[in-house]
Length: 479
Image (cartoon, rainbow, N blue to C red):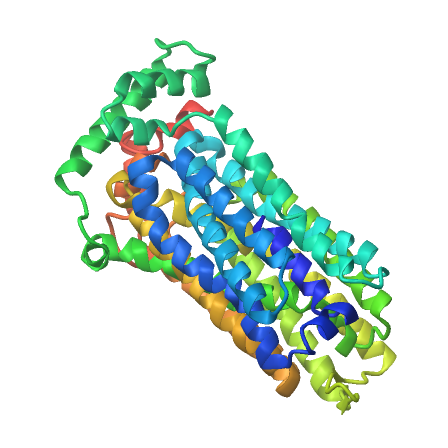
């Protein structure tokens, strides 16, 4: 749903019928309209923790689907900017709750050996939403009426309805069930998920005992307020979770996704059809290059995936900045739209770098930014901590989407250079501070994060635990 909403508005912003209906909003107006969704996401992700703890992950997802659909209906029927903005904010509440709850729900259901792969499917689903929205917009931009933008917005209700119905057939989280004293129900869920319903399977019995022990310990150390998340020793994990989401947004991915037609048009693809077609292809690239991460993230590991992704993103941005800055010749049309008038060669280079950046992000920060925070927190703070880290994602997304139209228009290649520097710096941040979590159970994270804050210096301690048999049981069971 989030992917579709992200992509659908990116194209609609360039529709003449949409512009005329809402009286040609300027860069500030566009920024407010775009960021209204992310403002709602920020609020939604903050309140999701308590709802998920009280009413279960499953019911929380269903509630979010209803809220999102209400917002989409308001957007579809908008008669002025205020109504559109309110509708986007309400949809954002639903997306914010889903973005916090779904990865946590997936990580609590998934076996450790393939947890990263399964949670990565969320990012792949987002990219599919973007692809579908791009091509729906491309097909409808030929329509010369309000239908061109109302129908794509209204279609958002369909995936929300599908998810709502599908959740009736999904199990409750076994960890949530144990936490609420429903141990027998949790045992049945684990047996179905791990051993085709065999309640006596050794792996099922072992995992259930681990969860019960973890919940018992968590009951003693339960966090009663959000401020306690920033106390030692939990603070380290919370800050890392915030950092991974912040750096994901500071990569500039949503600048490209929200304003792709504008960026392509500035880069030399004149004509509405050409820029929208290029945008559609960028969605395909995003979707296809998420697949390698899904297949191999549990083999590559989180650290290497993020560092190589940052390198690819940084190089693409740097080349794009140089090509644009050295050859641009700014002009403005009668509507105030900016054109860079790049020569043919540099124009092709810039467009190619946009695709390379999207591919690099799709293989790394896209999926890992959802996987990593969902797996590093203990049960007693998981929902609250994930709500904080996901809120950080939306807070940075909100700020970037609000100012991006202005920055794209005024500093052009300077924005690419800023993002390039951030990506290169992120390589060092991941290397120094992010521990490796691949193939570890959620209960193992106490050991992983129990050592030095300098992750690159802590490998020896982790290796000693692995060798002693106290950690790494997942890897041994899968060899």
